[in-house]
Length: 180
Image (cartoon, rainbow, N blue to C red):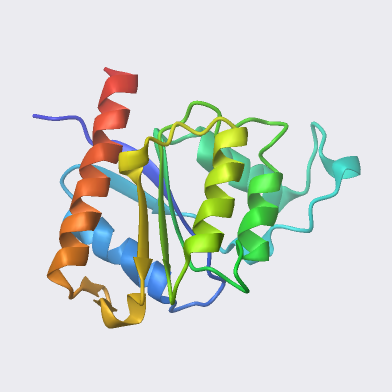
């Protein structure tokens, strides 16, 4: 029997029923036998980053977000691109982890699922690399025109489904290497 890994899934969208959250649910269903997926509560609850508050007693939403990331073996981010960049709420939440280093050497997978997505994807990858996330190239995926490929909690486009499976298998392999 293979180990079941606990991962945090972060949606870069603040919408309650976003395509990115639907994509997370689809992955959760596809990998229910291999992953225990904990969906991070809304990143919109995390206050604006303030270095003066980044100490041993940060705001409660920050402490909860950090604790979630510390308690998992991997992090999956599914995000849209907003205005050719990383959604502000997602970048803000990640900024709160810089000093506490929750992403450092943690197996991480990134799916940018948007209308286009290249610039936001590239920008977020730069951030993840600088904070030392363990994110091999095979654990990075850009899904352009995502609304034509994901309906509800299902990945309806076969090519996209294969790309997602390739990414998730790489992500799981990265966790196996780190934790075996």
